[in-house]
Length: 284
Image 1 (cartoon, rainbow, N blue to C red):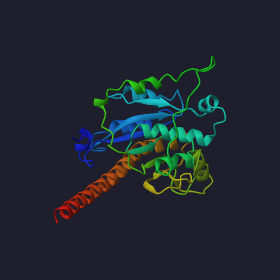
Image 2: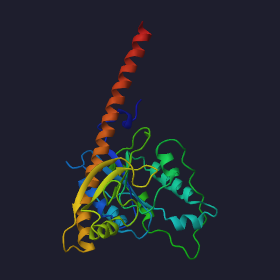
Image 3: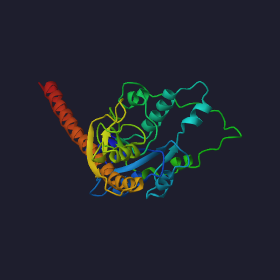
Image 4: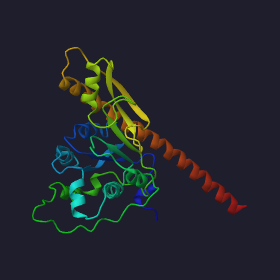
């Protein structure tokens, strides 16, 4: 007998969004607020992973209704507790946790680490995830991240069902506060502001792009120019950019999920045709 998950049309199943954060989580909040509305229909945040245990975004996830499972995977803590581990091992562990959340899409919303090939290879299905690390007990100088336990107390019935099988590649998108090809990497806003003051650019912008191996060079999905005005201070530009970010992070997530839904419908139609063909062959 088919399971409940298998009886749900894949194209209509509520999609699961995993969000990676490092800080205040204002862009996470934008996605939470838009979930299951016309701005982001048929989709819900089901897991938040932070690289910092004190990130306020974890509190935003806990305060959501229903509350969203969270965990923390801090680079320094991971390396300290896994002697001999590398940065690539850390990225693979991040990917392992992401896979465990059974997402339809992964959104980097202020994730402050550049993810290496080991992360992308796992999300694209080219490499198997590592086994969960056998962590030693916490030492007297370490503290357990206070938000980790929240991941285990969410009634499953309040969250969308995961897909019966994990599809690959898993779409992964990133929010970057600059226009395509301009100011890749860290500190994009102050660098753009300095360039404007020097007459090198007329404006700046924000984009949501697909995550690839080259930093901030993936296909742009949503792009918005942001004006820099005479008399602006850096804080003014930052506020203007953050306002736009809250809009396009939702738009970019919606666009990727719409593409995924279209792919699922095509795959469902293809499988239906194959079943008919097999039945006809048996009856012939």
